[in-house]
Image (tube, rainbow, N blue to C red; front, side):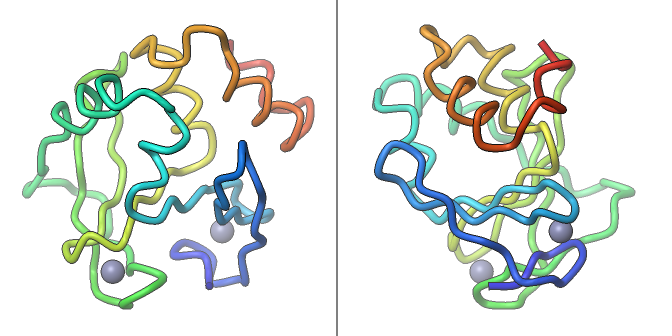
Length: 134
Ligand SMILES: [Zn+2]
Ligand SMILES: [Zn+2]
């Protein structure tokens, strides 16, 4: 799969038995449909997060193409995070794209990762440069 931002091939990482795709150039993360729920390991928290997604039809950000179906993705506002973040979502539901640090930011500020399990995994995986964001 190619990165929707820089078009380079992404690498697959295993996080808690969930395979995620990661671009080592821009630091973005692609989650296939359902992987966010698997990562959070808590259906209620996952629902809370997914329910906070709002389609941003007026976004000035350039649309990106889904790495699976290659169609333009929708901009989604994640209002649960502070400040609200803009992520990309495939209209057909293939998955979600997070720019560098966005997934960590959402998990942090929405308090979905209570014991910092995912934070620690991501920090260990991506190196020291992610730790400054806490
Ligand atoms: Zn990239
Ligand atoms: Zn797609």
